[in-house]
Image (cartoon, rainbow, N blue to C red; front, side, top):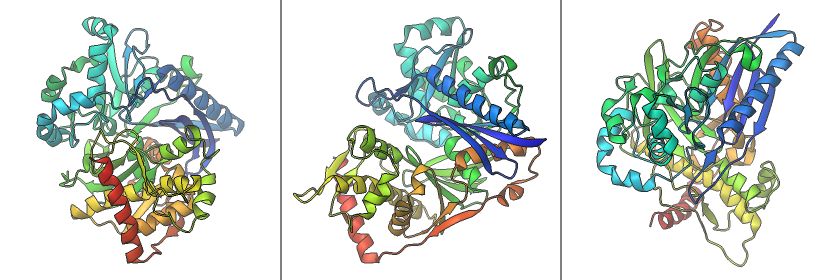
Length: 490
């Protein structure tokens, strides 16, 4: 009988389940998009019921496919959008408010009020005070949703990032847990001591009782309930999506770097067992934790990458689908001096300016819709340059960047990225590195793979991109970008 690993990849705009062979080959994918809710300016929410129903649907699909192939699923790994926050009723499993998404900016004013606590929080969590992380989202729900106080008194309230919520649902309420990578994104977890931090919990007035147990990334997270999905399958790994993609890209050596281009864009550099504190506004985070040993990373977060393409499609209605962008970008010899800064939800690293808003600059009578499409694609490369420049200032000089995510299927973008960051860029054979990473992690836990170097052997190159523009042209393009950015920081 064939054996398979399954990755549940619960992302910002869709839920996916992917069936992998033990050699890391994707055999079958089921994907379902769900609704993005924007109740007020700067607010972003998801319906947890919709997240759960899409996850169940895609999981049923891959289970059915594995049976058709006369195979057996031996383990499940879960990877997820990270800082998104859900609070639910321990007894009923029902959420008390919509999931507040990582992009949400409603706690901006509160974050400004507690800025003086940033040094303390940064030393312990590796993070800046920002609405991006879970802590202020939890606080907002506790203070604004009457049901929360009542359930808290009765000790019937639970918090989780998406992974915890899914584990709770899949195990029928038997397991309330997360892994170290997801915990490290809440702004409540002490990454030096590997525990929830009492001093920080006091600042936010959050009760420890509502928090999940924090496990290794490869660990026993219980098994799926037969009642829920018809099968009892062990859940053996959990990783936040960006850490999962670093794992799927085999970034196991100190100094190895991956950059993912999905809804947002995220650069992670493995820094080994040493926690590095960036002097240039990058985050310190946990890359993964195995056998109670932590591997750290430096991370740069861009809030809008593929989300800019979605904006072109859904709001401005300039394109029908993302695939058109490559042809449109290619149809122009240059950007005609048009830049878009897609600060739709503020700016992430290295600016951390939550009040910045998007702008278009450089328009002339000759500018048309194609300039705007190209400017959105270019903006992702420019924002990446800003992150790598911060790394360089911190003394970290990556020679090769491994790229993944939906946007990198666009060859024009991948080449432009290499041109702008002036570094060799490598795209892997398997584009779904986030799902692959957590499948590998699950396989490692149950003994399918003996070591990290064993997993490395399955990583294969699809295409290399090397810089192809002159230094003077690169400087000119970046000068235009820097002028545009300055206007959003006013």
